[in-house]
Image (cartoon, rainbow, N blue to C red):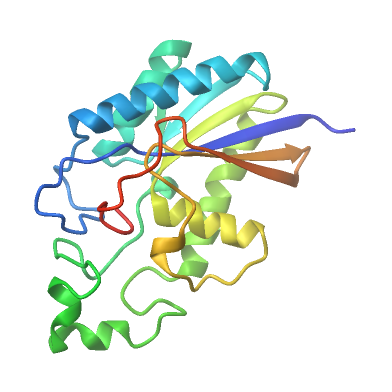
Amino acid sequence: MAEKTVVHLLRHGEVDNPQKVLYGRLPGYRLSETGEAMALAAAEWLADSVASHPPITHVLSSPLERARQTAAPIAGKLDLPVEIDDRLLEAGNAFEGLRVGVGDGALRSPQHWWKLRNPFRPSWGEPYVEIAARMLAAVEAARDAARGAAAVCVSHQLPIWTLRLHLEGRRYAHDPRRRQCGLASVTSLTYDGDRFVGLSYAEPAGATPSDAVPGA
């Protein structure tokens, strides 16, 4: 049997976003106090999991501030540096900076309807196939760096969920409200050598509030 390696995909914690806009790749969006507590809870869970999982030897993060803030507690607990990988970045989205709740804001305006013409690509942002490809490359690089051990990759909801759909052989088009990828959740990918063999999911910081911005 080849070496077992685990890559933990950690979604960032809650962001200070009182206007409830889809902030996407916009700068200046930091974790709220609740988000900081979520990051700490996830860090403690991951540190405690070392006893029953391969030890964590690498911590990587999206370049966005909220992801780096979420990576900091686990890196601090394990005395590891945070490595930045641009491939873990949030997905590009034409609705950045706008309110996009169902029946709310930008989605009610005819000027934006053209952006919604193709949910399978999707037409309003970075194509799912491109998200999956860059996330897979990032995860495989983390796997190779942490052979026989584990790595943590801090990213964002849509990139993590899109990669999961890819690995499970499911269609990319989906309802954002049905993603199993809560705030500060951990999606753990297990590899036997280079072969993906399984996935598990945990919410060490608890369930995401029902009024959270979809995709944020």
